[in-house]
Amino acid sequence: MKKITILILFIASTIVSQTNTEVFLFDIKKTETGYELTNKKNISTNEGYDSQPHFYDNYALLFASSRNGQTDIVKYTIDTGIKEFINYSPEGGEYSPQRIPGTDDISAVRLDNTGLQRFYRYDINTGNSKEIIRNLEVAYPLWASNKLLFSAVIGEKSLELVKSDLKNKTNVLLEKNIGRSLHCIPGTNSISFISKKKPLWEIFSIDITTLTINKITNLDDNYEDIAWISKDVVLQAKKNQLLQFNIKTDSVWKELINKDSLQIQNISRITISPDKTKIAIVGE
Image (cartoon, rainbow, N blue to C red; front, side, top):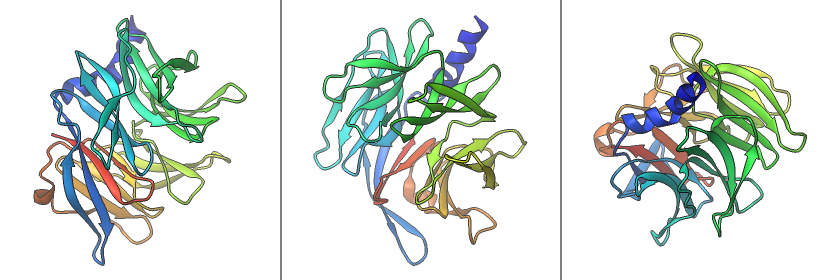
């Protein structure tokens, strides 16, 4: 019973605390002084939980969305504004959608009504699913390749960073007490993760080949949602702000854009398109 309680806590508690979130899409452009966000659009426009956006490619976005009392995965086509649910699993809800590299299919975390949490692959056309990793309670995944997965999994007391080699069917525990925000660092062979071991949380990098871990910087207060706009510049969501930090030149976090211009409260998730021209922001 204790394991099921912990298992539900990491995803379900997020939904409880954010009962009416929306997904906003902006164009983002680099300027002489920083970055400019324009053409704000609410692409979810849905009562209830809409969150966990992930760019399928430069032309489409995936996110988790409430429907008929459960959460399913939506694919939003940017040019047309068309939204399509790609799955329907009455036995549970789906979260943390991502495209599987080198394929058209996506992965998602399924939280069944019984409390069972597992990681599935979904056919993008039919919605048919099959389990990817058995006996590993993935909460927040990050694909490094279609055979290599880094994920925040549910441990005894916290989220834990695990490397999964799907070809050899091995799972290696790398770090304990991490956050939910995992990202590939553009133009490098590394990913980033949030360490919560110290009172002020920290961003670390890990080389996906050598597994060498290095500290990047402290977060600005303990808000864990970040995204990389380049190999040197990382963004952080903090309440109704977006902050930026250049790891080569900055010593403190700076405001990316005036918070009054955003007009979004309680920002929780941010993600950037592969071509770095669009940004999706979750908030209220």
